[in-house]
Every structure is written in C-alpha cells, then in structure tokens.
Image (cartoon, rainbow, N blue to C red; front, side, top):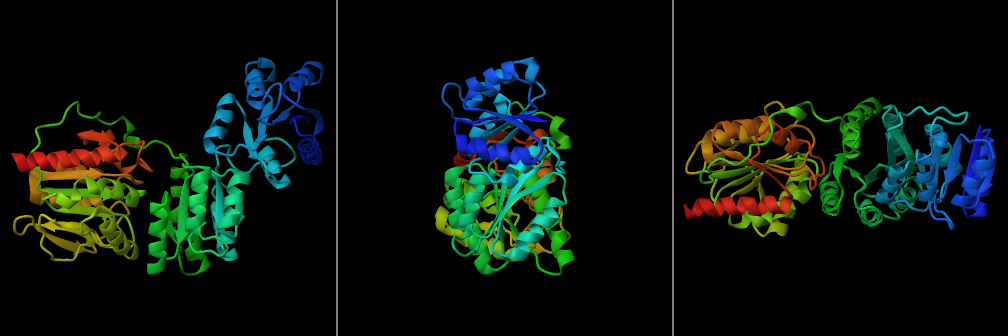
Length: 476
C-alpha cells in the first residue's frame, strides 16, 4: 500500500513515515497542501494521506476539500493529524471529508490504531467504524483494567487509553480525543473534580461520567462534580469479579453510547405530534418533577424561578441512590433559597413543601388534608427505577386532578411517560425540557413525541413558565 504524508514539520513527517513503513506502507512526503497536489498529479494514487491542519500555502482543510471534490480520490483514506483537539474543530475536519483523526502529540500506538480503524495496514480493526472512543481515568490499576476489559467486550466501544490520575487524564484527552471520559472522583496528584474543570476548559461538551464510591463522602464529591459540569455518574460496584463486571455492563455501556449520541431514536419517534396550543389551565394544586441524567444542574437552574414562593407542594423524583438524594437535598437548599428535604413517610404536604424522593423508595401522594400526604414504598421498580416518576405522577394526578402540573426534565429512558399520560387524562398539564438544554433528551423527548407536553422549553424558560402558571392560579 502507498501513503502520502503531508505536514510542514519535517520531524513530524519522519515520525509518521516510520510508523507507516512498519505497517508495510510505501511512503512519500509533502510539506503543504499544494505540494501534495503536485505529488498526486505526477505519482501513483496513494491508499492513505495523512494531513496536517495548519500549513502554509494550502492548509489541511483546503486540501481535504479539494480531494473530496475530485472523483479520482474518492477511495483514498484521509487521516488528519493535528494539534486541534476540541470536538467542534474535529467536527469541521470530519465535515470537510476526513475519514479519521489523530491529535498531536500522538503515540505510534494511537496512529496505528486509527489506521487499523480505517481498514488499512496489517492490523484488522475489531471495533465498528462508529465505535465510541472511551478514556478511563482511575487511580486503581484493578479498576482501570476491569473497566477496559468489560467495556472492550462491546463492539460499539473502544477504550482508547487509561490514565492513573486527573493530570494524566487531561493529557490523554488532548492526545487521544475521546468521545466519552470515565473519571474517578478521589485520586492522587489531581482529583476528579479538578480534572473535570480543566477538561471543561478544553472541551465544554465532552461527555464525562463520574465513577464514584457509594459513601457519604463519595456522594458529596459526586454532586460537586455534577454541579461542575459532569454529565452523569455511576457508583462503583462491589462484590466478586463476575458481579462487578455485570454491574459495569448494566450501568455504563448504555450511558456511554447515549451520551456519545450512538443510540438509535426511540420507537415512539413518529407518535402523535405536539398539540398546537394548550388547553385552558386550572389553578395549580401541586407540582411533580421527574428527572434523571443531568438532574442536579437542571434542578439548580429550574427551582429558583418558583420553588421559594410556590404556594403549592413541589415533589421531585431524581434517579439517585439514598446517599446521593440526601446530599442533593442539602445542596439544593443552599442553592435555591428555600428548604428542600428528603420526603418522610406519612408527612403532611403543605404550600411550602419542597420534597425529594429518597433513593431506593417510591414516593406517592395519598389523599389526606388540603394537599395530601406522602407515602413511601419499596414496591418493585418501574422502568428499572425506584423511585420512579411514573409512580409519583399517577398518584399525584389521582389526588390533585386537573390541578396537577407535571415537569419532565433531562434523563435517559422513558420514566415519566406513562405518568404524564395519567396527568393529562385527569385534566392536568405537562411541560418538558427542550433537547438543546437536556444532557439526554430521553425522558422529556418521549413525553414530547407522545403529544403530551403543552410546552417544550429551555430550562430557564421552563422555570419562568411554571412561575407564571402559579401566579395565574393565585390571581384567579
């Protein structure tokens, strides 16, 4: 096979050429895009071009577009090797027509792996072309190895690198350009939260999943990370190797693919369209909120708009374990300026109640007094969730009727869909978060596509709309 190495740096050309020759490529070189075109016009057509982005005379993007506009080079694989590592910049290169991308500085292993992914060289790619590139950052060698082994068993995931602390993780983000980062919270040299903030400076939209211990300290640190911009979290499983491996498969694989945008649209994508206008709203008697992935940040942005002076109960289901919901209630209390508590079985609801369902328990509204009371149960999970928004929504609708206002925020899955249908059937209203401001438009998207949402709004506008509906109810 033949390769043309295009880079204005002679040392870089030499490094790339050495790697390619070990893979049995015949190599020639060019110092910029115009030299590359001249070489192509007089020589044999190569199977692969490696192309630097920033070069004099003609840069890499211009060269890629020129080649992609010429049918003679349709079969050539174009691999960009560049110091540009931000996802929006890589997207520009891919839109121009590159088949692969390696960020500088790179290793011979990373370059070889990317060439294999393109189907070239003696190494056969074992991943699908659209495999999610994952970086694992954890100070435990055992955890790094186990995560790498289990995740690599899925053909849709490729573990491109591992790192033993946050500082090494940041360098790996630059070098390997992953699609998703799995980041431990507590590490030496640089902890996960500090690393997360540095990663966000490099790439504000790179999906990051925190991998934390199920302890009070771990819960506090994980919430710090979620507020600092982490997209999701998974608690570290305990038990024997087989049990831990199974929990990793169940808890991480779908999250990784969803956050990387590699999942297929849900089956309800062609369901009933949104209603053209809302029905005449009744006075709000209570607000129920269902949220999952990305929830802490969404709640912190939404609740201040109405919760401190709601005048009706505000009940929240956030998919989290018990340690985490207790910490989240404390955090929201500090952030929004009113008391947020974990719900207690049997407590009466009042106009100032802002309650969070405890992790591991369903929260129901039972008929009692002016607003009802809380009932907590350990009934079987629904939608693989306990607490489940569907349980809260349907019991609230049975008590508050057409005064029920349901809110579905960012999250994976379809929890809240069946409950929203019950709210609407009882004359209540449902509002959902829009796709752009959602970390994952799973739960709200299901409700919107089913035609159950009266409005689909960004988080801040959603909070303002809730406040407006509450004020209308007080004025009527």
